[in-house]
Image (cartoon, rainbow, N blue to C red):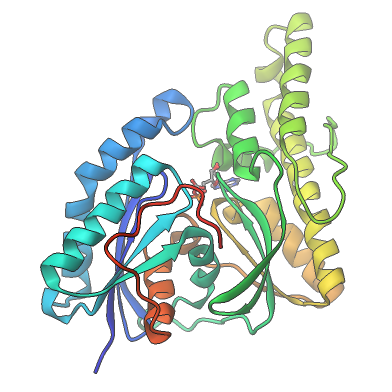
Amino acid sequence: MSVVILGIESSCDDTSAAILKDGVVLSNIIASQKVHEAYGGVVPELASRAHQQNIIPVVDQAIKKAGVSMDEINAIAFTRGPGLLGSLLVGTSFAKGFAIARNIPMIEVNHLQAHILANFIKEPGVEARHPKFPFLTLLVSGGNSQLIVVKDYLDMEMIGQTIDDAAGEAYDKCAKVMGLGYPGGPVIDRLAQEGDPNRFTFNKPSIPGLDYSFSGLKTSFLYFIRDELKNDPDFIEHNLKDLCASLQKTIIDILMSKLKKAAKQTGIKQIAIGGGVSANSGLQKAVHAEAARSGWEVFIPRLGFSLDNAGMVAVTGYYKYLAGQFIGLEAPADARMHM
Ligand code: KG4
């Protein structure tokens, strides 16, 4: 018998639904919320409302695009956390309603675990490479900056994480200081490609072990800009590309230094990067350059599966389904869910 899973993702500001059949993702529909652009960051209350509007149409499209019938769906997998509570509640409540209506089991999915298992997504007619266990993942997004050793599909160990802001947050907050809008990461990435990365230097943290910190960089960037604007009110416009390139270089240096340290410590050469910031052109270049030097084999999910999406939730749900890991209707959304 085939296994068909409906995956639901609503942890932050993307409402997504996906259908997976026998390990292959047949549809992955994502509704991104434009409403936050005007505020320079995600507004939790508005995110929950937008999820509420989007969830039914997104699920409907995912089922139609996959060409499966409702009766074929064996289980519903949903992101139970971590994330914004109001956002998670929409996906969690939808999953419960769907599970009751269809009389099928529910599978809870941890958002971080899903980002990692995105490396195992198969699509119809697409030749894909998958990492071998154990592999090391650098997970970098708007909410996460973690180093994780993946021993098996459902066996992972976090060996480093940010003690304050996430890398994506540093991008977004510094972009806001420069008036570049939200999300700032892709804009900085684009402008950085035409700037001088060595023009300005910003504070790098000295945190022991494999943990990250980005709040000091954000503050030093803010103070630097504030001081320069006193001498030249148009300092940002005059130096925008160099500012972006120098900031990007600093963030990538910070990310790479701990990734290299973790690879050395664990002796692992299968390296995956995931989360929204893994789309960054400079980070991808740096990882590939290090791969050539150190003999790493690198894995990066394609863009649709590296940003928040339900395809990764469905694939995680698939491995949990095979392992018989289901959850009861009483399970609450959990903003701080641990791996
Ligand atoms: O995984 P994701 O879609 O979800 C959240 O964590 O919400 O990641 C979004 C983050 C944002 O901070 C965004 O600025 C960042 O990923 N991002 C990038 C790039 N594309 C997205 N950061 C740097 N360079 C990029 N090309």
